[in-house]
Amino acid sequence: MRFSNDFRKDLKLFASVAVICWFCIGQSAFAESGKIIGWGSQVVGKGGFVKVAAGGHHSLGLNEDGSIFATGDNDYGQCNVPAPNTGFVAIAAGEIHSLGLKQDGSIVAWGNNEYGQCNVPSPNTGFIAIAAGKYHSLGLKQNGSIVAWGANFNGSGQCNIPSPNSGFIAVAAGEYHSLGLKQDGSIVGCGDNTYLECDVPSPNSGFIAVAAGGQHSLGLKQDGSIVAWGYNDYGQCNVPSPNTGFIAVAAGETHSLGLKQDGSIVAWGQDNYGQCNIPMPNSGFISVAAGYIHSLGLKQDGSIVAWGFRYNVDYFGSAQCNFPSPNMNFSAVAAGVYHSLGLKEDGSIVAWGWDRYNQCDVPSPNSGFIAIAAGWEHSLGLKQDGSIVGWGSSSGGWSIHPSPNTGFVAIDVGWEHCLGLKQDGSIVAWGSVGSENDFGQSNVPAPNSGFTAIAAGGFHSLGLKEDGSIVAWGYNSYGQCDVPSPNTGFIAIAAGGDHSLGLKQNGSIVAWGRNNEGQCNIPEPNSHFSVIAAGGYYSLGLKQDGSIVAWGDNDFGECNIPSPNSGFIAIAAGDTHSLAIRQVCQFVLAGDLNNDCKVDFYDFALMAANWLIDCNTEPNNPACMPK
Image 1: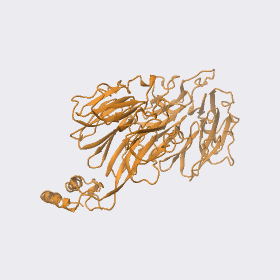
Image 2: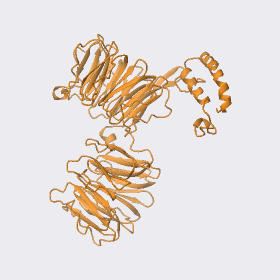
Image 3: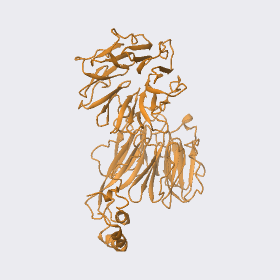
């Protein structure tokens, strides 16, 4: 509904009366169940991408806005795109490092740098194309020369570009060899040649594109045919018939991909992880990329399709955001690093995601639980009788409950340790034994009494006292244990990877510790928060009106709250994914604008805000659009 500016003034008096009538309507729409909403690192790419690149076990997508999306294995930071993540025009993914080409012709490199593969030679200007091999990198200059850096060992010489180093129009990097395409349509190869991967078959002419795999090479001819040479034990050089109509090529470790003019993809070679099984429908593709044992295809609609060994899915089990059906009657959620837990109203636990260490296999009897917590490779459940049940990896003693296993009222799990709060206000910590407890995250400071809440971070711990003060201990390199002054008036706590959050009585949030991704920069207005959660490098805050605010790292969409952002009653933050429970109303209640199953001042505020919109000055406001 839209009103003129003059009419809105008349409504101000009416508003104060109308709200009284609203409260006479009723306060509840009878919430019957809780539905879990999950978002974060389950998706390779929904849309808006213009290029793709596949590395060892990670994937890159170039967005239309010039930013890079990275997902998969991040052990060496190969998915941590340096800031500012803007202005990129091309991407390349190596075994464990990544490259991005900027609009200004400079190259940005990140990830493993053991062999200097991320040290772009000076001057870092004038580049027009990039390629990343296993441990080396290539950059093509505007003048047609190739610059190579990184590993050049074992006499391979993959960085020794043959003379004359000129006239190149494209580059490709394999495991230990490099390829360059010349303006005259010939291909030059250098580096390891054990399998003749550098010996281009005759006639070496008429090529328009090149690709380098582990130890094999591909060349695309002007006539749409593909020439393959090098290592062929898995048939990666046996181009399927008919060898015509190709417009692009990509080479993985031991498999190959070809994109046809009709938008379909042809794959051949080793298929032990399904890297050659293109998902249906096999159509609408405009680009392809091949990693070590996985493949990527870019669709016309800007979405990315992945198949083969997909790191976040196949290594960590079913996606941690794909909750099992039926998605209802949940009362609490917990997000681990790569798995999730949901507590049902009947006291049972549902677990999904990475299950390599059985952290999703809830022990029998799966009943009588009142609280849950999820860590790296293990899970905890608190029973009604005050006992704790642990399951999953026990290599660090994480899932082995302390003795006596009684009298617990709360639990939490960090990356390497567990916390349990007793009825008497004391905290029990366990799990990080020996060197794994070098940071003292399991050493509760004295006096160990008067605690009302606990929070376990990466390698640090928090305890909330009865007097509203916070006690912090453990790893403190980023100040995550340095509670800001005044250390009073807190009612809730949360611990992330290397940062901490405290919720004040007045509904504001205090944040401290590592802030490299802005996880400690609480958005304004910093008020009316009721619940807080801290993830790996991001933070969540649940507002009193049922909406969620998220800030910090968003590489995996962990801060992209699903629409509608309303009606939420619980939140949980994992390493790179988020969970929330949305209240489900038994029937629709007139006036319930924020879907929280109540008609209250929050709904009236939404209506009042709508009334006060001036469509003359805000014509693009959704409320001013034609209905």
